[in-house]
Length: 111
Length: 114
Image (cartoon, rainbow over all chains, first blue to last red):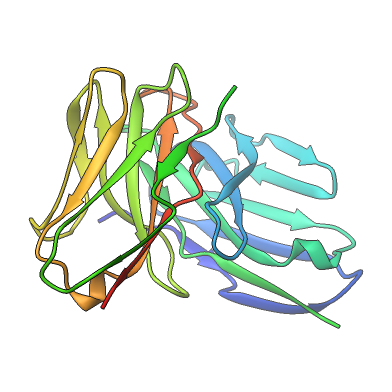
């Protein structure tokens, strides 16, 4: 089936560091969504991207919709302890609008 | 505006039993998707319903089924439970198929099969 390649799988960083993660696919998407999930909770939508090349910010988070419509990245600047969690990307297929999910990037902040 | 509501939050069942989980989408949302998430795993897509019809289905056995009612509320059922069915079951609602469809999740139902 359709797949999104999300990397890295996990990140161990120091508080204050910047974080970057990305998702790629061989399929074309018309929408990219980035979610964060904390333990025992459902994923929460962080950023939605609708147009190729679009760059959108939400506080310290910035995400971009790749120009080829096959990739997206999420950056977190100056990480803080509450950024800990699993970040998921999801892309909506251009062909049938089905939402395809990445496997997640687990962010851990070293004390 | 109320969010996505899933009930119950926690459930313990015995192997061989069946279980029904409920999801009430955001008002005005007509599409409901279900996902299974096991510890340390990503989201495994179960199925999606829109206007009471199953629109997409993931790769799960027939023991997993669902339905959607005219008010867009959805239920999923798992029959003959197995230990491996223990997971967090998440429901997401969206406006419906079409462009720019953001999905919003409930808090999930934590199912434990013993």
